[in-house]
Length: 440
Ligand code: AMP
Image 1 (cartoon, rainbow, N blue to C red):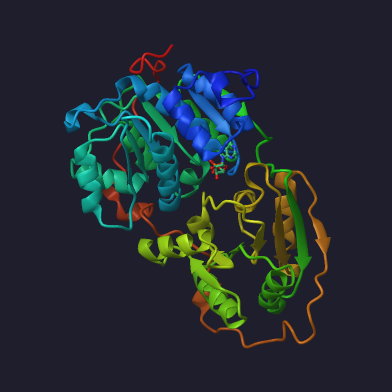
Image 2 (spheres, rainbow, N blue to C red):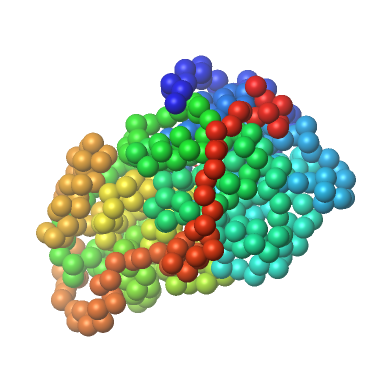
């Protein structure tokens, strides 16, 4: 694997030599200067290198790969109406529907002054409009792995001209069991391509994935892996389980927070907390894997529009959500997996703005909290939260044992339900860089 890059940091987007049509869209997005990951990734990707980027969410990593990717595709942009003139040339894989949708929104925004076409496919929604979009042709395809395989099986899409592959939030794709799907998809791509992999954290498994799917990648890092942005203040309140609901309501009301993401470990817990917060007079709704895609999109849109004060979410549903300026994230339950803490609190303190991450812990959670501190290599300030009297009284706990079951993803990554997808094997994926695209 190549050494970390030493590219000098450029202060303006115009310093990179990005095509003027892309610069115009960037300027309209209101970005005055590149974020650190962008400053490192842009020149390397524009030069055709494979890249492994360690960047936590909120660092501007979507633009870090989308802008140079569009720039490299521009020579192939054309105004022909023929679908054959618009083959898929860049494939961006993401772990969740929401992230796919957000990356697509970004790609569409940055490419709006070009003749490149972007399309997005993900599960949980009608496949037919997606089939039509694929049949019309698109140079940039953003997809979740399961739904992409559905389209491949239905022969709606041909990946034989893909010159750039992006694996976004690759760590989460592995966590969600997508490796066999990824291997199957990658086996269908040309061996000569540029490969880009982004992950909040660099584990051994991610490095192995990089070795298999990328060709001598440049490793770029903007923060130590498994660290949290220093724009986020972190605090943990010691509470009993029965005080937690009152504590969320108290924090939201007393601090006049108008946009908070609250994390629950279970789907049922998320729905229940959202209902309870509503009863407490807080505009709240839940987003989790038991909700239909239409419900999830509607809830997310309300939250983004400022119509909801609290979005109660499970990890998978919230993964990659980019809601500008969320001032506060509350871990109602501490995550079982310490890396999820990094992802969760990455919802706040995005792109340089400040944010607050509040966690609740009970005496039973102390080990989880110390696992998190070990991972992020920083002690989290512990404090007591004084609740108004009468708050947090004992209440009858539900007897349904399902309520206590930890959240288990159930989307298309349930491998046992997808035997046909297990058969794909990664062949020889070593490749030379960007030949298709005329890179070095
Ligand atoms: P991401 O890490 O890609 O999810 O991006 C987080 C947020 O930062 C998004 O809302 C982007 O629109 C925003 N963003 C990306 N690049 C920049 C930039 N150079 N300056 C300011 N904001 C940015």
